Amino acid sequence: MVFPRTFQAFNNHNYRLLWTANFIAAMSRTLLLTLLTYYVHEETGSPWYVALVGFSWITPMFALGLIGGILADTDLRKRVLIWTQAAGLAATITMITLLATDLTEFWYAHLLMLIVGIGEALDMPTRRSLLHDFLGSRGVTNAVALDSVGNGASMIFGGAAAGALIAVLDVIGGHFAVAGLFMLSLMIISKLSIERVATASRSSTSVIADLFDGIRYVAATPALMATVMITVIMNLLLFPYMHMVPVVAKDVLGVGPTLMGFLQAMTGLGSLIGSVLLASLSNVTHHGRLFIAGTMIAFSGLLMFSFSSSYILSMGFIFIIGLGLAGFISMQSLIAMIIARHDMRGKVLGVIVLAIGTGPLGALIVGVVAEQHGPGFALFINAAIGLPLVSLVALTIPQLRLRMLHDTAA
Image (cartoon, rainbow, N blue to C red):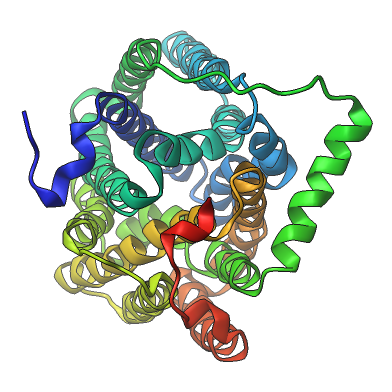
């Protein structure tokens, strides 16, 4: 079967498998995050403890992101994908057992998300670098956009399914669904055909040298540095809103788990539509401009959401956040793959994961402010700071706005 231009990356068999595995992995994380933030809020009523769920999930990014980048440049890539999914499956089964025997405590949710976060930190650079390996420089734009389509779809189904599962089968039913997704992801990953990478054995000294090589390379490349800076801003100030949605749904909008799930799903719907539009574009050359525009749109949606006390309007504002995230997420890794030398690609993606790892600090801050002043005020502060910071980076590092050619990645 020959796919049309918008979906041309699907003509590659390996890419179809990887896309499906990425979609399932993203949906399992969305489902699990929604389940556990809801569970912790029900158990404690505390925005602070809810924010700690997100903190536990993202913290490993900072500690292990660069290690994941190094692994993405080795022949361990397939094993990394298998190990991380297996660890998530084992942790979920353990949580099911504890819930079924009524032995669980609310803070076990933080441990589960920590394990999932460790897996994501280690395998994210590999998942992203494989897009380039499978499709090459000229096909990677479409591949990354379609991968973002999968992420958007996963947020729709994951968020909505979490709300429905909680309403019908309680939190434990949702965990059974997560376990099934992890098993399915493992089966698909096992079918991937990934070329081996010839690498010399590394001492601890050479691993440390690789870590610093990636950081130095990014620091010496203005467009990459700007991408990393905006990634830090987004993870400190934008993404923590996800952990507050169950709090806003219950305390501000006064809705139950089903409507809360639909609210979560609106991010995915916006991201899905935005990503399909990006996948349909041909001859994209100014990736940085799309990256900046997506970031600004997402923060604008967050600003409006922070003022909303209407469920319908809140759905629309979260949709706008998702629409912006399509540009941010698609272009974030794509810029790295286009600009970076082939031997530095995994390390640069590792530095981006490291930047994503600043998110736990944002989760803590939004939790503290929401605890004292309410979630709406906390989200308003984040948006009011984030918009001018992104504008400042875009204006002071103009290289991000210049034309980017695919052949520079070779």
